[in-house]
Length: 516
Image (cartoon, rainbow, N blue to C red):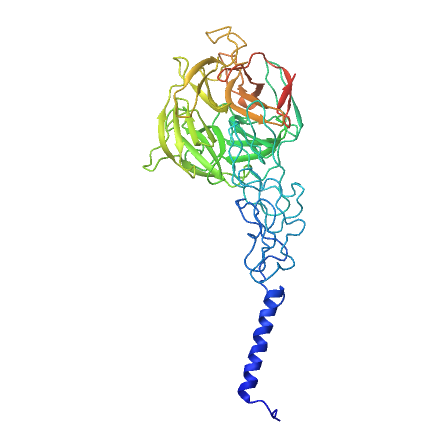
């Protein structure tokens, strides 16, 4: 039945007016058809820590609840129509913790971040690394995978500052973001071995540690020592594989097994030499890359630098072949090492070649020859590290498996001018034939910085080869080779020394200090 005083057109106009008023009312009151993007819980942090956390920047339109990276959430962002909706303010747990701001080296969190108290519930072990050279703080943070954010790292020590949120230091290839900072003190490792014998490390299974002529890479709070694996059943020192051991105090070692065994054929196949393995974490890709020297049984023919890769530091490395440039030219040298820092990644050789590596660390871009030899007798076992902004290059004379007086040079850059500084240990016998002071009866292979809350200890690792003082039968049983681990003393910004052989000493890894 029609209303006696309204026409159909009048009724339609009235209905439309009522509907428009209803919609406008809902929009201004914060209810009704609101934006359902993350604003009700403040669960979406921006990556990279770029925003300052200013009010109103957190989310689109009325939702307004996205978390500004690196700090406080948006204030709800008043919209044009009225007050911010309920849930525009980030609830407890949605705030990014200390370390979330870019440049701090911390790790930003996934949308499910928990508490803001700095606890490290999830460590991203293999996130892209932040390199620190001992003189500054790491830059930026990597995206975490959930859990609470990480506490900031250790404070500066004698060698410079450690990267906030990381464990990286000079001279090595460093740990990763996603790691907790150095502990205030501990663990404490005791290193003991007489000068005549070196340190005979035993692994956690009670067996002799068998990794020689290699390096150490630190990932978070763990040191991974890798080197040549020698058989007890032969005396030819042919390649049998590269082994790895892990430790948190540089004194107690767990056997991680062979990370690169003998290959079926080729450069690292049967009846071949394979030596000087050194692992870096490629700065641009985060991939772990192992470089080594391969040669025929004479060590001198068909020699080249080869490489293998792994996504994890202690995984099985996949052999890739010779390291070449874009034209296919190899790096045809004997003893070598590898090094990476914030300036790039490098392979160095006994003859003073510095190969600058490509971004993916799978090839070399340039080859520069530098003068690092302090004597006229040639150089072996190159070892490079960086301390207080200065690069150090340690080399050994060519006396086979017998110890000699190792020397060192310094430079301000890897491809710069190197200056000979002398010997790294006292010299009482310049003929290198009889004295025990011949680098404390060792040959250099690596220097490992240990950055802690109170300082930095640079630990020299030299191989005490079997028969190192023997002129008739040296190197024949290198499965019995031992270790020389000694703290380096710096007298100036370019002078270092192993002044006194420490038969027993202790290293506090968390503090970055050592004592007798």
